[in-house]
Image (cartoon, rainbow, N blue to C red; front, top):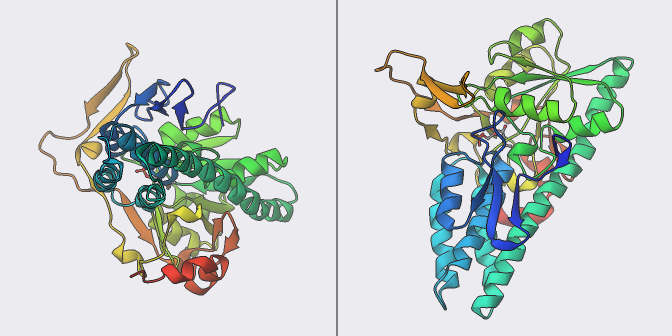
Length: 373
Ligand code: MRU
């Protein structure tokens, strides 16, 4: 995807030295574009925990490269132990996105095929790269499927602009490239379909206003920022043709955990007969959890609610206090939208109903994972 006309991914190994992994520090966007090197497992853990990187797919890719950094610094003969420690520390960094553990476990398992330290390290690095490449490819593919929904809406409107509402940032910044919720939008733009995006601000971390609006502007997609509470009104006024959001973890029964506030959008969409789609690469499915209510919901510091950061007049990024100093704030980061409110899941293999049988028909090889030992 493009930043000021130049193509980037959100994470990549330094071509001159693959023990340096490069990321875009998303805490500084859209005001400052800073590329940050990660050189140790701890750097990767901190980058995920403190949200230098965020979004399910990118968290997974960072976990993959974090495992690579753990292997790089492993003591002789101790690569597998270093990877086990890597999985343990990464798994604690953020709880909700399924991709994190999926990526770290995949690396731990594939490394077992290596017979020497060097062979293990090489397998780990190549697997981390494969996870990142797959993430980008899967997002591109789900865009190719999802665009058909937008195409149909455009046809029904006689070619007039299709208005799409999204919540949080499930754009390319949340993945390695393309994004999940944004991939069908980018594909629609490429197909010459007129689209406009309503971008929820997404308090408290402001992924919508800081990241999605910026990302869409970079891509030349018309978009308008709205407050988190505006969506229901816009839907009643027939200003929204569809909703597309991402997800951090989706049960194999179709319940979806996504950024806090998603559930309220789904309720409003349901009440107004507006299609509500969730886009995800299959790495976001949890094949073991039956109920969305069992998904661990991250609780972050209340400071994210009582303060706000932005660009000050002197060009520095500053944080100011919004509330009385002793205000107690409760900051759940995600909520669960039940499958019954979801029109469909857009995956790399196609669009599927948010229900167990249909999901398992599309991913038959996962049925054996159902209720894993
Ligand atoms: O807290 P974040 O920014 O890591 O939250 C993740 C998200 O960006 C959203 O919930 C998103 O809609 C799904 S992740 C692709």
